[in-house]
Figure 1 (tube, rainbow, N blue to C red):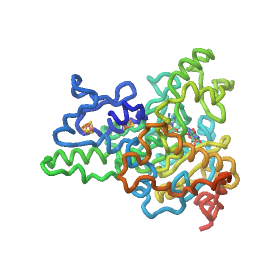
Figure 2 (cartoon, protein in one colour):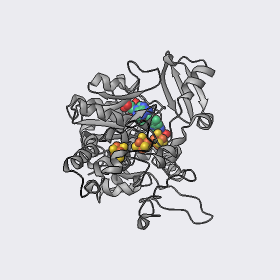
Figure 3 (cartoon, rainbow, N blue to C red):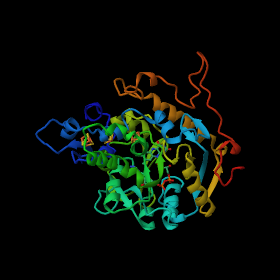
Figure 4 (spheres, rainbow, N blue to C red):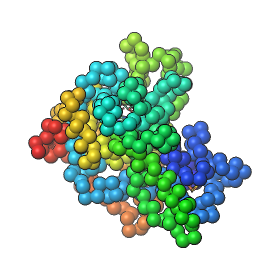
Length: 419
Ligand SMILES: Cc1cc2nc3c(=O)[nH]c(=O)nc-3n(C[C@H](O)[C@H](O)[C@H](O)COP(=O)(O)OP(=O)(O)OC[C@H]3O[C@@H](n4cnc5c(N)ncnc54)[C@H](O)[C@@H]3O)c2cc1C
Ligand code: SF4
Ligand code: SF4
Ligand code: SF4
């Protein structure tokens, strides 16, 4: 609570609340809050003080280990290629052939088409998504467990206000769903990996009752065990809700219930029903409405997801990064269904260059005093180079970006790649 929430670093993912085994914290007004004993200080946890716990801190994406250190746990030696944007097997550009998805989707509709296909074919029972649905204020999504193809398709499109998708994993437990896809921004994928890979050994301390230990380990692992595969979205920031309520609705006079889609392509584009589009300069929005907690984030490209997707430098197409073998297997079957067009990344050099530039920028932007990537790491692990990073250029030299990989070096989809 002190190192993350009070420090202004909490990304509001809700993961700590999802895993708390003893109902000490709840998600209140977009933050975790200690509600078990209202009279106690906000960082008080009687369980932690008496029997020991800290499951919440174990999954928090703001605390060590962070993405680069977690690469070992998630990928082990299974790293075909490695770049500043993470471990990957394939990187390419794709677009769905399903017109009903493409019209509503953010970029190439790949995320929604993949989820809808996976549900249709019975690979998953549903998907954790963010959507503006019944009961939500227009333009403000809430976490949803979409269990039908229709519900999945209704979630197409990105909203740039924060939506704590990890909270939907509590509903998954209640509804006994055990094979889900999970979509989230990077700060939602990292806790998912921590739930799966964190060392549970430290919960097993002498004197703690076995049933308490097993409850704590169960809560730590359960949400991740329900996720069959994860799709991470590239992300540089989200905006404060006031962008929509104060600026778009208030100053620009656009009723929020008339907005179809918001997109960021070098500028913020507000698409109204009926086809009209309003623009706001990106610098203005970043200056006035960027959420400060995002400055504590180092992960642009969802480095730990099975599949990562983004839209920088593309129009109407999605950049797809397949990272794990699981991601490759699900994509290969999806591509074989004939529902998607794919192009090698070398044909989208601009997208490749922006992706590398933003991945680096995000790693370098932590504010002074922030918990650094390795700030709370054991001494011997501090200052380790970022795997796959070519490092700083020599003095006086310009930074050179590596060229996009050729198809035979992972620069194409599995269906296109020479084996
Ligand atoms: C907050 C945010 C910031 C982003 N920033 C960038 C960026 O800087 N650069 C970049 O290249 N790409 C960014 N993206 C990703 C991009 O907008 C597209 O989601 C991605 O390219 C996939 O496009 P698609 O057409 O295949 O997705 P679609 O088929 O349209 O599916 C989009 C998915 O996004 C999910 N979603 C929507 N809003 C949210 C939300 N607020 N939080 C979590 N999940 C959500 C939906 O559940 C849906 O499953 C961002 C996405 C979000 C949500
Ligand atoms: S230490 Fe354990 S019981 Fe206490 S708030 Fe964190 S997760 Fe909940
Ligand atoms: S787990 Fe997420 S919601 Fe909880 S403190 Fe950390 S960043 Fe905030
Ligand atoms: S920039 Fe980072 S912290 Fe902010 S929403 Fe995106 S992934 Fe989360």
